[in-house]
Length: 503
Image 1 (tube, helix red, strand yellow):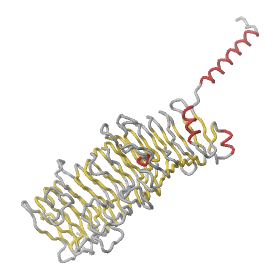
Image 2: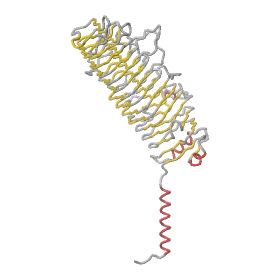
Image 3: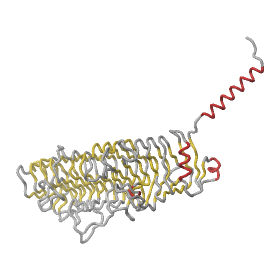
Image 4: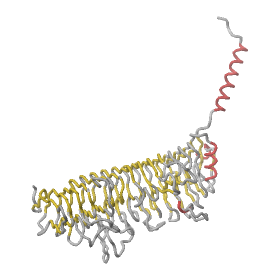
């Protein structure tokens, strides 16, 4: 085999070197580092962009603009003062060092605006304050009606972000369908390990403007929390921890291992009118919500006060292994159930703070029906518990086609000496009821015990209702039945035993 001349070998090496240099020059930059003005000297040395603590959104936005689609802007430790908005491009990732290390503080109406698809946000803390109305629009397209993080576009991932805001903006985390920004259906958004804490506004809120594509679909929450939202100042009197359906319909919602605690109104909330389809909660806890002062005059189901752990006005909603603890008015408030399921849910301590001089009636599980619903059964409650309620452990009114199985009622304080009310008289129908009060065409199986109520179970205005289970009580009238309707009640399967019985 002939040997190559040294000059040929040298030329080949030069060519290969040039090709390698050209290849390196052509390779796109996939990540850029932005250093905060108060970050470490080492971070500033390595940074592609360095902030000075003023208008830091400019440097962040420049880094985002310099990336190819799919690139990552890395934020250093420290505080980024953003007097304007940060708007990630499609496919971009904004990555911090964690919510206890990287801080984005928005002012002068600046927000984190996700209006392009496939954006990922991960690992920082957001704060918003001092928002004002700068718009003359009459379509509610106003600065205050947004979120510190506002998501308009589909396929957004939000991981490991903690947020707070004062009372000048509507939400910390907002999913908003606005057809002027993003016309398709808003779907495929997920929140993992996110927290809204000590806010003057809603923690997590879904909403929709316009008349097209108002259904928000396939949203997932995993290990998220809304804590003390609206408790120390509020955007409006209705601030909740999680509000999944304000003006939007909702479909394919999954909420797992989430917490709502200490919020002004409900912990987990849907508004009355939107449609709710295929919404599932698993292992969620809602405690100490309803911090708003109790009204002096109150009717059960009054829309002026929710005070609920879970506020569930209608729709196809399932709660599995969920807990409501020490909420002010209701543990679980269900209105017009349309195929609803509560399985293995637990309530304790509803009505935690006595309010002298008010007509308060705290209720652990409240099921109200104010209009006919087509679903049969309308609601299934199975293996649910009420423990030491400070009011009625169970209140069912105006309801038909309910199936309640293995309900455990333990030592309710009751209201007016009654631990649970199954049915209701015309003197106390649901608010705005359009159907007969009481219960009809239903099956109720329960075990009740306790000595704080003179009557554990009060059955009134029932029609074609079958009862079974056991009542453990030494009261003179542990079960009272009044004013039954045509078809009446079947009590043959309901056994009344002494309080200390082990039968």
